[in-house]
Image (cartoon, rainbow, N blue to C red):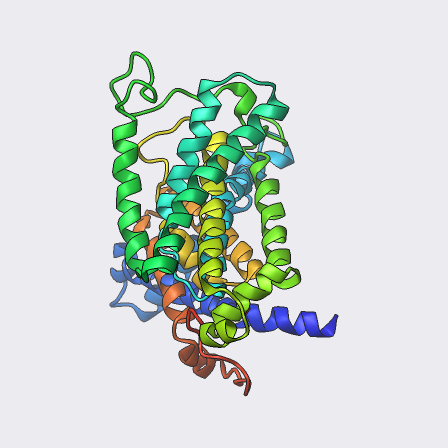
Length: 390
């Protein structure tokens, strides 16, 4: 137990410190870009007071916009105030799955930059089954999710096949496939099969009610069953990596591909299997998103989930636990952006600045250790994609 707790501490310590430091810097940026604060420069006392008040109000707005808003609870039930938290969970759900798709690739020594395209293909498969067929919910939902998993798994597996057989670099291939997926979706939404009848806008018919993931806290909160799918999938990925023979092969190839090959492990098989599973994970994220949140396939269905997944995997240091926690953090930041704008007048782009600062400080562990006087462990590896072992 102590060993596991120490392992969790090692995984979360530097990301947590990077998160705290990024928020402090972000708060300073928010205050210094406020015209009211800067108008008090001639009076040090007023400047300091307004400076600290601006930072405090901004952090409060972030909390109220992502966790609990007491203003929503006034005159209503206490639980109504948790509506922002439900939005955070909804935003974090596809990020967990897409983040795991990137993290698993890192564990095998691969760079899966194609989670965006895989996410889109998963949404396409789930949407088609969702609006084109009529089944009982117990059959319709699993069938739609499976369609998304298979479509995206094949799309990701194609990358693994090219790398295994031709040596094509997965970074270049996955980046190009992101563009292919985006433009394929635009074309698809103009076809008779996917274009909503009587509509000229690129949007597919809404999935049948029997294919929609059920809400489990009532209509007032947006949390749907997708969060359970995401968490169960995270447990499965942890088991796969740490308790299965296939997961051992993934980690062995990620640690040293030449040594693993010498030991009799087929690197080609590992490459293909990894990318197929990674595609399936990202595709499941897309399927959950379209069945649980959007309910209709549109040109913007992918949003930036696939690209944010790279940041989530970075922040989580490619560990399953770290990826889940990072997804919730980024879900909270995305949810709080509008409240930050409406309450304090701070542009939404500041939230993106904070996200970028978190990644920056994660990528410079030596700086964080120096600032917070964290002692380095002798056996700790440099944080690089192929060196992460969570």
